[in-house]
Picture 1: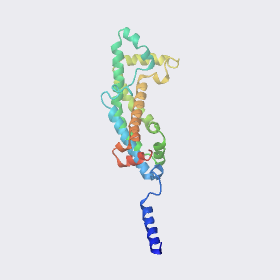
Picture 2 (picture 1 turned 180 degrees about the vertical axis):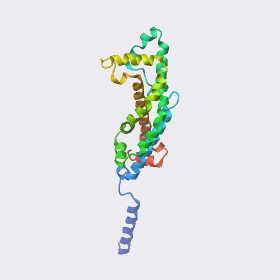
Picture 3 (picture 1 turned 45 degrees about the vertical axis):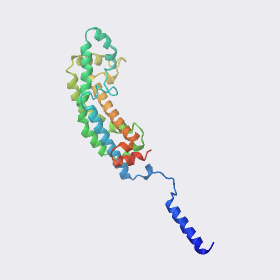
Picture 4 (picture 1 turned 180 degrees about the horizontal axis):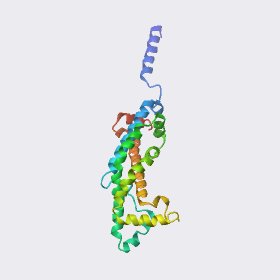
Length: 233
C-alpha cells in the first residue's frame, strides 16, 4: 500500500467514525437544566390542579365518582340499616347526597390557591416532586394548602349539609360520645368530616392527573412536559 492509499483509508475511517454513534447515552434527568425541571413540574402541577377542580367541582363530581364519593361517617354508616328500619331512610340518603354536593360546591374555591402554590415552587421543590414518587404531588399540595383550604371550605360545607335535619342530630350525638372509641375525633363533627374528605378527594384527583403525565408523557400536550417527564423513562 502506498502512502496516498494509506492516507485515503485513514480519512475514510474518520468520516465513518463521525457518522457512527460513539456512545449509548440516552437522554435522562441529569441532562435537564434547572429551568426545564422548574418549568416542567410547575406546568404539571398547574395542569393537574385545574383538571382535578374541573372534574370534581361540578354536579356528580364527587357523588358520581366511586373513587372520591364521600360516605357517611362510620357510626352513621353502621346505624344506617336501623335508621332505615325506623323510617329515616330518606333522611340518610338526603344527608349523603348533601355531603357530596357540599364538596362539589366547595372545590372550585380551591383553584386559585392551588395554582398559586404550583407557581411558587423552588427548583429544589421541583426536583423533589419529579423524583419523589406517586404521592409527591399530593404531599406537596396538602402541605401547602390543606390548612387554608379547610378554613375556606368549612362555611360552604356547613351551609350545604345543615339543610338536612339529621346533620344537627348527628353532631349532637357524636359530640357527646367522641373520645369513647365509638367515634373518632375526625368524625365527631359532620362539617369537619366532609371538609376533610373533600380535600382528600381533591388531592387524590390531582395525583391521578399527574400519574397520567408520568405514564404517558408523549400525550401530555406540552413540549416541556414531554421532555421533563420523558426523561424519567
